[in-house]
Length: 184
Figure 1 (spheres, one colour):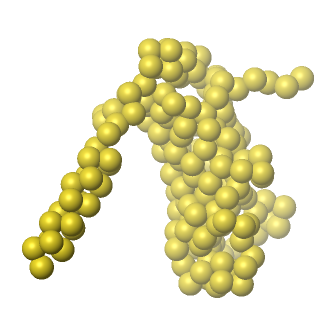
Figure 2 (figure 1 turned 90 degrees about the vertical axis):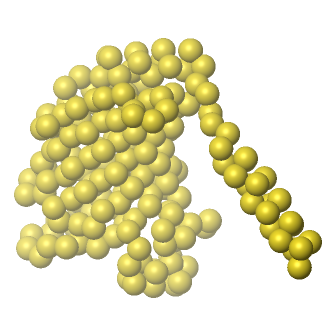
């Protein structure tokens, strides 16, 4: 019994030590992130969607209708081209959506994803309270739907997006952060 307890304790200590290691950003990474934030000219390319778990989403996953390697709570969207952009004072997004509508009424079958373009309201960009990076917060309306967005930007060029909608269940995204280069 003592051997089992010692083994479990050793595994717990090793696991805790592995989890406690933190990524330390280089000065170049911090400078690049600061420049993107200062210029307000960046793009987050979404690679994973994390919808709220629901019975209907579990049914879709169990039917094998999600991309390979995906689960009901984590869906691979790397090939969709989904993005959130900040260009000057404007924000725009075109992200695939997985979840449920919460409101009835008008439904546009051409707009099944999260799409918006405009000047954000209640915009803020602040340094992260823990670690390095920034937290972007804003609200934006597209037609009758209102979105509340919180994005975490990290020096290692990764990002997380939390998206709340007035018409749909919440969804989170993970992706890659880069300076936005306009294509002509």
